[in-house]
Image 1: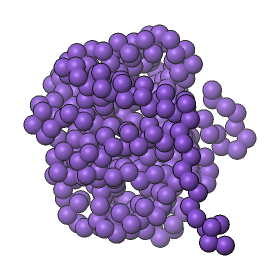
Image 2 (image 1 turned 180 degrees about the vertical axis):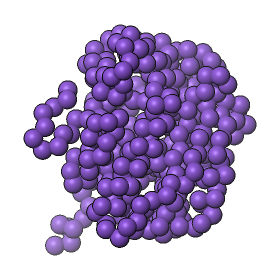
Image 3 (image 1 turned 90 degrees about the horizontal axis):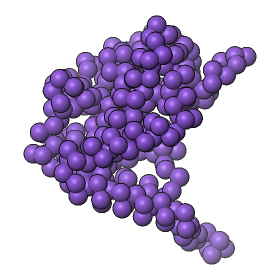
Image 4 (image 1 turned 180 degrees about the horizontal axis):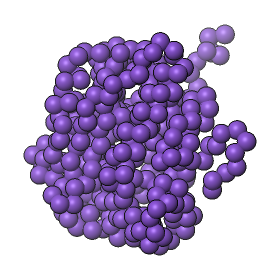
Length: 313
């Protein structure tokens, strides 16, 4: 009987998992040794190759841009998408070098805007939910915040390769950050709020009911995660936007923290969840409109459709 209750031995990694792991370690090691300007140039080159070679993602990106910005020309859509690939290449470079960044070195190319908004929300003691998304340098965002002495948790999906997942999370969490996996999302998030912690939630990806509800996003109904609204209403945690964005005029990143959002609280739970999820989507959209070339257009954001509606892709 006791033998049946023993924890099964861990499954050894497959050949493919080992290959992916060592390929990533080699990339991080090689790029990490380069001076930052050279690393970013190499990242931009990788982005250019992806722009040219990944036709399926390019078509998805252009379709999304037509949905979001029907008033823009085809040439403008292509320019936004080309710029996105350069930004993604830069983010690869930043990730590869993150393990070597110190507060002094990172502060040369990252600054805050609105840090007081975050500190004011944190000092309320009921926890902070940072509304964020795949906009700008999202991996560097929480890492820099932890370097500055403000570690936080980040809700993420487990990577399919356990060795890669552990390696990536090891870099993310070097300075006190923690990872909350989506498969333990609700319990982990509620516990974090009860401790008064800060949690960043990327809520700009396609969802499916019942985890998602349909709200407008660029004027098109999009199935959007409702967990952030549910937890905020239940715990009284503060919700504020936070995005690390590249400012061309300054040639550096700025970690923007917006003001705490005023949540809708009518007492009708389901209506309040829908209204606040719509508020969060609109807030994210506003940032994307200011920095369209920095959002992940290659994701099928509008894949899930309301019942009876055909696919947009």
